[in-house]
Length: 238
Image (cartoon, rainbow, N blue to C red; front, side, top):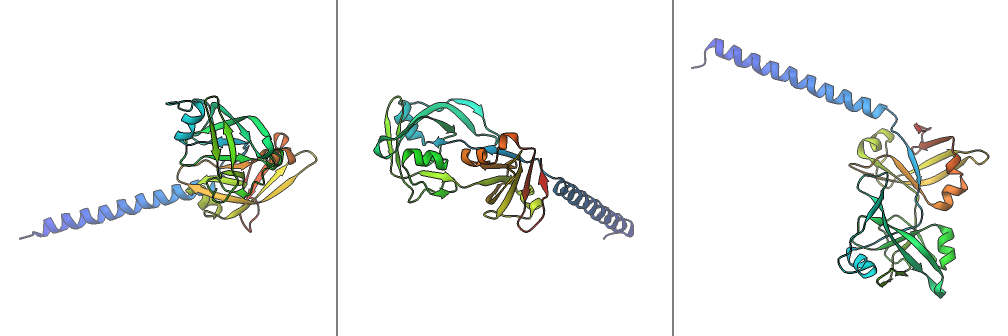
């Protein structure tokens, strides 16, 4: 038999739990709202020509058992420029002698070039997002210990922006959406369209341009950088 006192105590405990839960949820929502209201820090980087390699190709190019040696961390955590470089050889033996390898290794090897690089090599490289290499041209990679012939994998990287899911919520964008990047530089203010959104759980807000794009807008001398969501005025700047 449940006494009146016991019932009252149970009822009171239940009401207290409900009040505490509502306060906790309200606090979490307030924190999320505050984070979303703060403009995230924007970094715009020039992604120079580079190569991504599989474990197998690392061993062919640099010797059995060889692993990439990190030289310098990149802005996104877990990624780095390696000590290793390779020579890229295109049609009619046109070549780029020392192209940096980036780590960590991948499931498929890939070469990312600027338009000028592709012209120099004589390769008609399509504009693709990293990893989308089906049907792309190939090339020959030459390392100190061996040679790899890629049947496909040479691209011009589409300009894109990395961000985490909270930042995507702040901008109101999702994977595959296209944003605009406005760069104010002395004498050559430039707006880049079709900056493809690439959100995930951990990435910091960073736009990647290739060397040609970075030079064209004088990114090194930029005085202001703005990232514009689709159909909206600027909400993030540096």
